[in-house]
Length: 359
Image 1 (cartoon, helix red, strand yellow):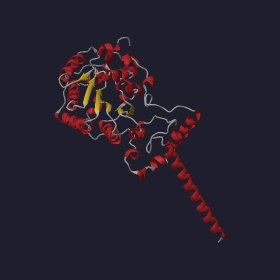
Image 2: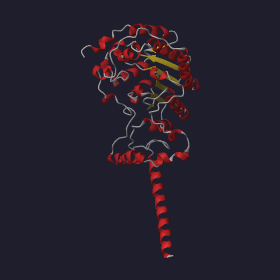
Image 3: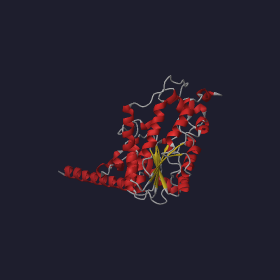
Image 4: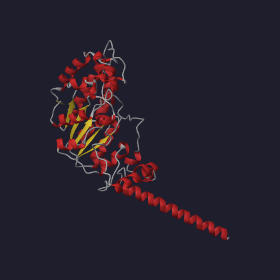
């Protein structure tokens, strides 16, 4: 009988201790909140910013800002400090490497719903992801729905997460004690300084460019899919928020991408048509602007500006912000068709053997 009482007492003690420990862990994670799921960052606390798909929703929900920079990895090297200076805003960066239009559109919409103060959105219109089903998401990208689904009953995946505790909460407390500054949006997801630039870096991703004998345009089915994707995942948000200004830009891929992905593949005409349709659809809205930089042919053909066929240097990222702020390289309803006809002439007839000069 005495043994049963002892075991009962021990069991109660264990339950109490376990409960207190779980409450302590939950309280600590919620207080620090490294993914900003519950509240804005604490002032003078040293936060680690390095995990966009887990941190972006909290950033757009709980930070103070009036401008949003979003898009794929081609937008990751933007410096919010420069955007703030150029546009007179207070911006945050919430990008999604490898993100298809659906994922970015949903995140952009949540940000607009969270924050009625947003007056400017800067977003990439990646042509590679335009030609996809309107509901398609990158299957290789993390999709932590518990972070943004507004369901408190699955927050245990965040609160009782060993990685959250040991890779974020504990190091952030240590950094704060040591006086290490919090990470900022200039460096958040920025990789410009980490990747070598130049022909050697770029050309390893492609083969010799042999132009296809015939260049095809879009099929009816491709055109239909493209329009559905644009209207669901680009222009729907523009239409829903007429008081917000949208700066959408077509990222400037390198001459290697033009040659290998389009001229050699034989879909050059389809690529040009895709950009024309993207531009035409977005420009139907007075609060939207479209920018394209392919007329900067010296930039595109100089592989020293690129780390791979699609990704450009931090300096080019800065120039894109400057150009957009100054209204340079902006396409209009009156100019866009001639613009794409002109660049089509240049890139279709370019001597792609020049890429290998000096190799």
